Length: 236
Image 1 (cartoon, rainbow, N blue to C red):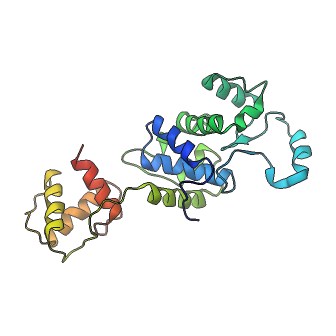
Image 2 (cartoon, helix red, strand yellow):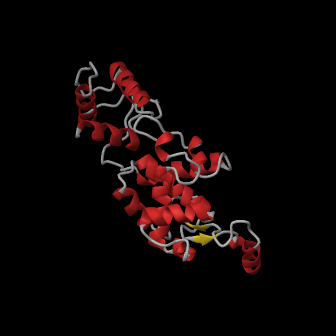
Image 3 (cartoon, rainbow, N blue to C red):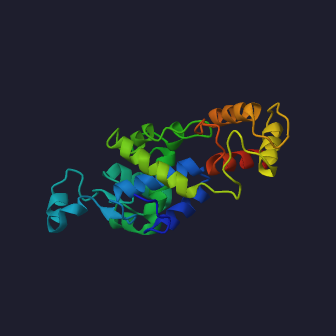
Protein backbone atom coordinates (compact mmCIF):
# COMPACT_ATOMS: atom_id res chain seq x y z
CA UNK A 1 0.00 0.00 0.00
CA UNK A 2 0.94 3.66 -0.23
CA UNK A 3 -0.20 5.62 2.82
CA UNK A 4 -2.92 8.03 1.69
CA UNK A 5 -3.61 10.72 4.28
CA UNK A 6 -6.78 11.86 2.52
CA UNK A 7 -8.45 8.43 2.30
CA UNK A 8 -11.83 8.00 3.97
CA UNK A 9 -11.88 9.22 7.57
CA UNK A 10 -8.08 9.58 7.83
CA UNK A 11 -8.12 13.31 8.51
CA UNK A 12 -10.80 12.85 11.18
CA UNK A 13 -8.67 10.20 12.87
CA UNK A 14 -5.61 12.44 12.67
CA UNK A 15 -7.56 15.22 14.38
CA UNK A 16 -8.60 12.93 17.24
CA UNK A 17 -5.03 11.64 17.58
CA UNK A 18 -3.75 15.23 17.76
CA UNK A 19 -6.32 16.11 20.43
CA UNK A 20 -5.16 13.07 22.41
CA UNK A 21 -1.54 14.22 22.18
CA UNK A 22 -0.31 11.13 20.36
CA UNK A 23 3.20 11.02 18.92
CA UNK A 24 3.84 10.39 15.24
CA UNK A 25 4.59 6.65 15.75
CA UNK A 26 1.51 6.22 17.93
CA UNK A 27 -0.64 8.01 15.35
CA UNK A 28 0.88 5.87 12.60
CA UNK A 29 -0.10 2.69 14.43
CA UNK A 30 -3.64 3.93 15.05
CA UNK A 31 -4.00 4.65 11.33
CA UNK A 32 -2.54 1.26 10.42
CA UNK A 33 -5.03 -0.46 12.70
CA UNK A 34 -7.96 1.38 11.14
CA UNK A 35 -6.65 0.62 7.66
CA UNK A 36 -6.40 -3.09 8.41
CA UNK A 37 -9.70 -3.38 10.28
CA UNK A 38 -11.64 -1.59 7.51
CA UNK A 39 -10.04 -3.47 4.60
CA UNK A 40 -8.22 -0.38 3.44
CA UNK A 41 -11.29 1.88 3.23
CA UNK A 42 -10.71 3.97 6.38
CA UNK A 43 -14.48 4.06 6.77
CA UNK A 44 -16.52 2.55 9.64
CA UNK A 45 -17.68 -0.97 8.80
CA UNK A 46 -19.92 -3.69 10.25
CA UNK A 47 -18.56 -7.08 11.21
CA UNK A 48 -18.61 -9.57 8.31
CA UNK A 49 -19.30 -6.79 5.80
CA UNK A 50 -17.35 -8.88 3.28
CA UNK A 51 -20.14 -11.49 3.24
CA UNK A 52 -22.41 -9.15 1.32
CA UNK A 53 -26.07 -10.16 1.38
CA UNK A 54 -25.31 -13.02 3.77
CA UNK A 55 -23.77 -10.74 6.38
CA UNK A 56 -26.98 -9.89 8.27
CA UNK A 57 -27.98 -13.51 8.88
CA UNK A 58 -24.41 -14.26 9.97
CA UNK A 59 -24.45 -11.41 12.49
CA UNK A 60 -27.84 -12.47 13.89
CA UNK A 61 -26.37 -15.83 14.88
CA UNK A 62 -23.45 -14.35 16.81
CA UNK A 63 -23.53 -14.93 20.56
CA UNK A 64 -22.97 -11.24 21.21
CA UNK A 65 -25.55 -9.85 18.76
CA UNK A 66 -26.80 -7.14 18.48
CA UNK A 67 -23.49 -5.82 19.81
CA UNK A 68 -21.45 -7.21 16.94
CA UNK A 69 -18.37 -5.45 15.57
CA UNK A 70 -18.80 -1.92 14.25
CA UNK A 71 -16.60 1.05 13.53
CA UNK A 72 -13.03 1.75 12.50
CA UNK A 73 -11.97 -0.97 14.90
CA UNK A 74 -14.37 -3.77 15.72
CA UNK A 75 -16.20 -2.86 18.93
CA UNK A 76 -17.91 -6.05 20.12
CA UNK A 77 -19.85 -7.43 23.13
CA UNK A 78 -22.35 -5.62 25.31
CA UNK A 79 -19.85 -4.80 28.04
CA UNK A 80 -17.59 -3.00 25.55
CA UNK A 81 -20.46 -1.04 24.03
CA UNK A 82 -21.50 -0.06 27.54
CA UNK A 83 -18.01 1.12 28.45
CA UNK A 84 -17.47 3.03 25.21
CA UNK A 85 -20.85 4.70 25.55
CA UNK A 86 -20.12 5.67 29.14
CA UNK A 87 -16.73 7.11 28.24
CA UNK A 88 -18.12 9.09 25.30
CA UNK A 89 -21.39 10.09 26.96
CA UNK A 90 -23.70 8.40 24.44
CA UNK A 91 -26.12 5.46 24.57
CA UNK A 92 -24.45 2.75 22.54
CA UNK A 93 -26.43 -0.03 24.22
CA UNK A 94 -29.78 1.15 22.88
CA UNK A 95 -28.33 2.46 19.64
CA UNK A 96 -25.29 0.32 18.76
CA UNK A 97 -25.29 1.68 15.20
CA UNK A 98 -24.00 4.96 16.64
CA UNK A 99 -20.62 3.18 16.65
CA UNK A 100 -20.71 3.56 12.86
CA UNK A 101 -20.89 7.34 13.05
CA UNK A 102 -17.48 8.61 11.84
CA UNK A 103 -16.98 10.91 14.85
CA UNK A 104 -17.89 8.20 17.32
CA UNK A 105 -15.87 5.58 15.46
CA UNK A 106 -12.76 7.76 15.51
CA UNK A 107 -13.15 8.45 19.23
CA UNK A 108 -13.62 4.74 19.99
CA UNK A 109 -10.59 3.83 17.89
CA UNK A 110 -8.24 6.31 19.55
CA UNK A 111 -9.52 6.23 23.13
CA UNK A 112 -9.87 2.46 23.03
CA UNK A 113 -6.27 1.98 21.92
CA UNK A 114 -4.88 4.58 24.31
CA UNK A 115 -6.81 3.33 27.34
CA UNK A 116 -6.77 -0.40 26.60
CA UNK A 117 -10.50 -1.00 26.13
CA UNK A 118 -10.16 -3.96 23.79
CA UNK A 119 -7.67 -6.38 25.34
CA UNK A 120 -6.32 -4.50 28.34
CA UNK A 121 -3.17 -3.65 26.39
CA UNK A 122 -2.53 0.06 25.78
CA UNK A 123 -0.80 1.99 23.02
CA UNK A 124 1.72 3.27 25.56
CA UNK A 125 2.72 -0.31 26.44
CA UNK A 126 4.39 -0.65 23.05
CA UNK A 127 5.03 2.79 21.58
CA UNK A 128 6.65 5.50 23.70
CA UNK A 129 9.26 8.20 23.25
CA UNK A 130 12.02 5.59 23.52
CA UNK A 131 10.33 2.44 22.23
CA UNK A 132 8.44 1.60 19.06
CA UNK A 133 7.22 -2.00 18.88
CA UNK A 134 4.81 -1.96 15.98
CA UNK A 135 4.65 -5.76 15.86
CA UNK A 136 3.90 -6.23 19.54
CA UNK A 137 1.31 -3.46 19.46
CA UNK A 138 -1.06 -5.76 17.59
CA UNK A 139 -1.91 -7.19 21.02
CA UNK A 140 -3.86 -3.99 21.71
CA UNK A 141 -6.47 -5.26 19.26
CA UNK A 142 -6.16 -8.91 18.37
CA UNK A 143 -3.27 -10.90 19.77
CA UNK A 144 -0.70 -11.47 17.04
CA UNK A 145 -3.05 -11.84 14.07
CA UNK A 146 -1.24 -10.45 11.01
CA UNK A 147 0.96 -8.44 13.36
CA UNK A 148 3.84 -8.17 10.90
CA UNK A 149 1.63 -6.86 8.10
CA UNK A 150 -0.01 -4.23 10.33
CA UNK A 151 3.48 -3.22 11.49
CA UNK A 152 4.52 -2.70 7.85
CA UNK A 153 1.49 -0.51 7.24
CA UNK A 154 2.31 1.51 10.36
CA UNK A 155 5.80 2.08 8.99
CA UNK A 156 4.34 3.45 5.77
CA UNK A 157 2.08 5.79 7.70
CA UNK A 158 5.01 6.94 9.81
CA UNK A 159 6.92 7.77 6.63
CA UNK A 160 3.94 9.76 5.34
CA UNK A 161 3.57 11.63 8.65
CA UNK A 162 7.26 12.35 9.20
CA UNK A 163 8.14 15.90 8.22
CA UNK A 164 10.78 16.15 5.53
CA UNK A 165 12.79 19.26 6.39
CA UNK A 166 14.50 21.18 3.64
CA UNK A 167 17.93 19.83 4.42
CA UNK A 168 20.05 17.64 2.12
CA UNK A 169 20.78 13.98 2.59
CA UNK A 170 24.40 13.67 3.74
CA UNK A 171 26.92 11.05 4.73
CA UNK A 172 30.63 10.62 5.39
CA UNK A 173 32.54 12.69 2.84
CA UNK A 174 29.94 15.44 2.52
CA UNK A 175 31.10 19.04 2.93
CA UNK A 176 29.57 22.47 3.26
CA UNK A 177 27.24 24.66 5.28
CA UNK A 178 24.67 21.91 5.83
CA UNK A 179 27.36 19.73 7.41
CA UNK A 180 28.26 22.61 9.72
CA UNK A 181 24.60 22.94 10.68
CA UNK A 182 24.46 19.22 11.44
CA UNK A 183 27.65 19.37 13.51
CA UNK A 184 26.43 22.40 15.44
CA UNK A 185 23.17 20.67 16.32
CA UNK A 186 24.96 17.47 17.36
CA UNK A 187 27.30 19.57 19.51
CA UNK A 188 24.32 21.18 21.22
CA UNK A 189 23.14 17.67 22.03
CA UNK A 190 26.47 16.83 23.66
CA UNK A 191 28.64 15.45 20.87
CA UNK A 192 32.27 16.48 21.23
CA UNK A 193 32.90 17.28 17.58
CA UNK A 194 34.41 20.18 15.69
CA UNK A 195 32.13 22.35 13.57
CA UNK A 196 34.26 22.46 10.45
CA UNK A 197 31.85 21.61 7.61
CA UNK A 198 33.54 18.30 6.89
CA UNK A 199 31.58 15.10 7.47
CA UNK A 200 34.44 12.98 8.73
CA UNK A 201 34.75 10.02 11.08
CA UNK A 202 33.99 11.97 14.27
CA UNK A 203 30.78 13.35 12.80
CA UNK A 204 29.85 9.91 11.48
CA UNK A 205 30.35 8.30 14.91
CA UNK A 206 28.40 11.05 16.68
CA UNK A 207 25.54 10.70 14.21
CA UNK A 208 25.38 6.91 14.52
CA UNK A 209 25.30 7.22 18.32
CA UNK A 210 22.43 9.73 18.05
CA UNK A 211 20.51 7.45 15.68
CA UNK A 212 20.86 4.47 18.03
CA UNK A 213 19.64 6.42 21.04
CA UNK A 214 16.57 7.58 19.10
CA UNK A 215 15.90 4.17 17.51
CA UNK A 216 16.55 5.41 13.98
CA UNK A 217 18.34 3.35 11.36
CA UNK A 218 21.96 3.66 12.53
CA UNK A 219 23.51 4.00 9.09
CA UNK A 220 25.36 7.29 9.51
CA UNK A 221 23.23 8.90 6.80
CA UNK A 222 21.31 12.09 7.52
CA UNK A 223 18.00 11.64 5.73
CA UNK A 224 14.60 13.23 6.35
CA UNK A 225 13.77 11.15 9.44
CA UNK A 226 17.12 11.79 11.11
CA UNK A 227 16.97 15.49 10.27
CA UNK A 228 13.46 15.70 11.69
CA UNK A 229 14.50 14.20 15.01
CA UNK A 230 17.70 16.27 15.26
CA UNK A 231 15.81 19.47 14.55
CA UNK A 232 13.09 18.53 17.01
CA UNK A 233 15.63 17.80 19.73
CA UNK A 234 17.52 21.06 19.25
CA UNK A 235 14.53 23.37 18.90
CA UNK A 236 12.51 22.31 21.94
